[in-house]
Amino acid sequence: MQKKGFSAVELLVAVGLASLFTIFVFRLFTQSGSSQRKATSDLNMQSKVLTSQNRILKMIREGTDFIIPAIGEESPALIFCDNESNINALYQLEDKKLSEKTGKKLYKLMHYKVDVKSFNLGSPAFDPKKSKVLAENVSDITFLISNANTVNVTACFSTESREFQTMFEVALLNTGETQ
Image (cartoon, rainbow, N blue to C red; front, side, top):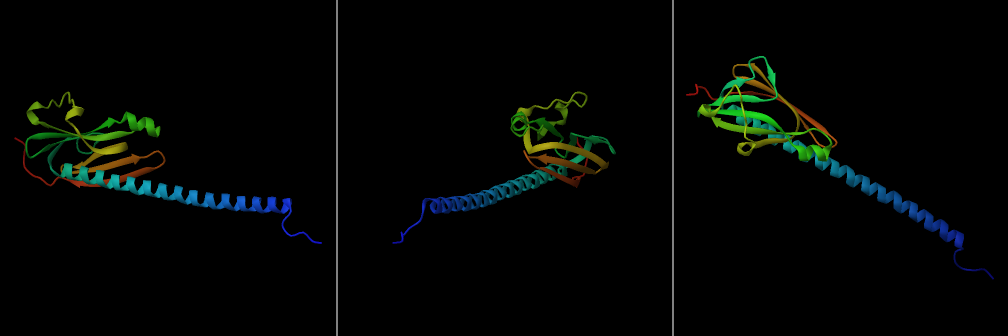
């Protein structure tokens, strides 16, 4: 008389193989999800970089004359006049919260606008409360004045795991002198 069914060893082998297959499939899906999250994060950061670049372009194009840096010099800040007799300053402000989160020293690129009469070039002080954010996740930015009307901007943006770099040239579109 033959027994019908499976032995305990056969059942253990079947359960073991099913478990290995389940683990393999689970890892495949979690790695796929991780790759998708990373790609989504990169696309979001690229979008932020492009938006920041466009804000910087728009801001500088409204200018009429560069003050700092001088032609041929490079600086982490840019100070220029606009046609409404304002001084505009683009400067970096450390983002301590984001720096702690990422483990990297990161900044916000700030825009400060003040009437030319209220600005002291010898001791420029910027009030963060009166400044607005143009860009975040900035690890480095430099402004190089290539001629009287053009600035080259090199910026590096950073997340916890990736670096994004952009380089662009901006020409002043407004003409005329400040009053």
